[in-house]
Length: 453
Image (tube, rainbow, N blue to C red):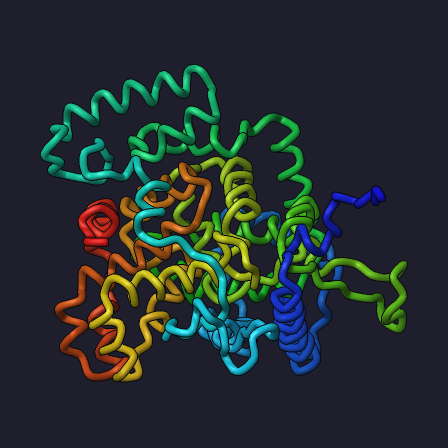
């Protein structure tokens, strides 16, 4: 007997196939909304209101110098920080396994206790084969096989050819070996299919107009985040005005809602007063469906080095967000999702540096407690900018965030001798407090291709 089976997955399975992950993400969203609503109530501030005309004029006049504004944000607090999110991930469990009976997973001693399949070093070597020791790389000063200046000159020539042909797939393959500084902005735009047409500039201006007209509670969260992070960063403080412009426009951009079809997250809804639960009176809040958290502005900051035209900077960031960054703050089983990255990091350390892993675990300094914030921010604000851009080249080149977990493990491997001597979490954090002198590509190469497997 034949049965006709509907082969189209239900929408929630496209968002996230594992029911317990969907449930955990839903609970986490409720917590975030509770935090946001309680702030509203405490401060007696509405979620959204129209700005008075004089305020609109004032904001328009100082649009390019919002950093000079010093609003009193002392009563505002970030809705959550990465460490709050880590606590949630540590409590994730697959209910199909009782009493931790997860056959292939029983030996995992890290903080993440869910049985997801992550890659081992042989698989990672295959995936990241272009990072091999005998292949030319930008970001490596002394490759024995290829003299750096010879490789660099040829690599620039090839990059110019890729740009001339406007071949997005070729550009993606090309950046796996790193981008020459002068070509990076154009190559990334080509990979992300951003061309900054007149209609894109007009769309950005419409978003700006929305910011001018309406005041949202999340605006204060954005201001606060920029002040707490980028404004205090030696590399990024000069871009404060750009960050406000991009993030305020981003919060109004309803096209961002489209990414929720393949994200495990669901955009929050707000109801007109007195109409709670009546769908015809519901609106997404904020309009883009994304509530910023502590450190969110650091996803934008490095891009300011590459793009100085606000509408292009905005489009690049939006595309980076809906392709990659959203995965770093939502609970899912996706290989580039933060849960898988945490598990990959812990598995790599436990497998290849077992002594270090057990030592840190014994002294109460679980490695993930230190590396989690690096991965959630895609290392922005931790690495020197030139090194960060070399890392993000590879994220774009491989269309994957897995390299973040590999780099986090490589950093621990690099500092292993010092870490074996520490006796507390605070001391371990001190050893790893400053990553600004690290060279990303040698660390990745040594960890992936010189590790005995």
